[in-house]
Structure formats: structure tokens, C-alpha cells
Image 1 (cartoon, rainbow, N blue to C red):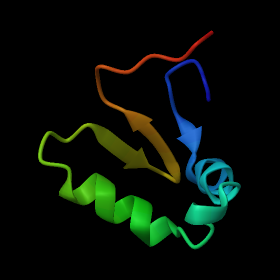
Image 2: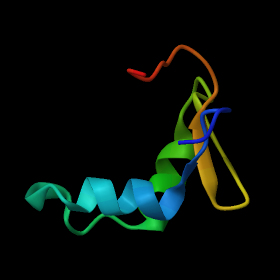
Image 3: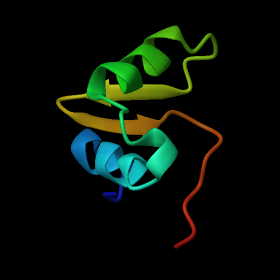
Image 4: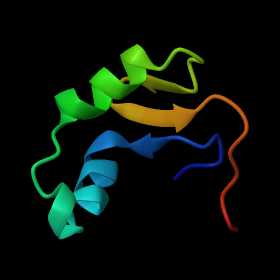
Length: 59
């Protein structure tokens, strides 16, 4: 994750896939969640994803 909160979507998917029950998740699944979130909590720009508000990292 960079200083603006963006994460490479491929890194996110690889992290999710490390959990056996989520091993089939794809980029299109992530995009579907982002596109259908009624509160528009996330955005994807140029292959990077971030939360728009209300989230923090444990730095």
C-alpha cells in the first residue's frame, strides 16, 4: 500500500487467494464489488484499488 492508500489490485487478489475458501476470486469479482457498492466505498484507478473513506491501516 502506498502513502495515498492505494494497493496494486494483483497484490490484493493474491492476498485474498491465500485463503483457501477465496482461492477462485478474480479481478472481475473485485471490480463487481467496487462497481456495486451502494456507498461507493472503493475506487480502482490504473490497476490500483483503495478505500475512499472510513478505513485505516495499522501502521
